[in-house]
Amino acid sequence: MGEFGNSYTGAVLVAQAIRDSMTLTGVYNTSQIARQWGYTAAIRDNINATTKKAVAFVFDEGGSAVQHSIYYFYNPSLSAGRFHETQKFVVAYGGCRFFSR
Image 1 (tube, one colour):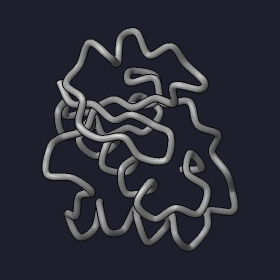
Image 2 (image 1 turned 30 degrees about the vertical axis):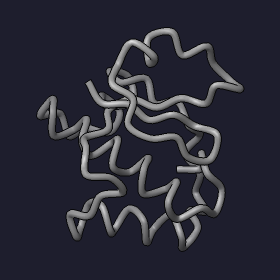
Image 3 (image 1 turned 90 degrees about the horizontal axis):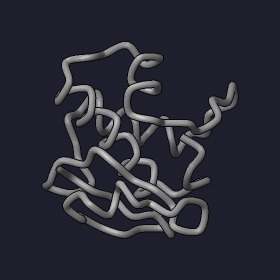
C-alpha cells in the first residue's frame, strides 16, 4: 500500500480496489489476487499508521472511498494504461486513475 505514501484517501482507494476485486472473484488469497489482477506494489514490513487505518476502514468497517466498485487503477506517468482506459472511469486521485468494469 505504498502507492500513495502517507495519503489516507489514496490508501482507501487502493484498499477498496483490492477488496472489490476479491469480492468480484471470490478469491481471498492475497498472492493469487496479486497475480490475477496485476497488483505489483512492493510489500513493506513497516506499514505506516495511515495505511493501517485505511485498510481497517475498508476491510473491517466496510467503508469505501467512492460509491462505485473499483477493480483497476494505474499511474499514467508509469504506464500507458491501454487496458485500463477501456474500462469505466471512476475517479482520478494523486496522479492515478481508477476504473470499474
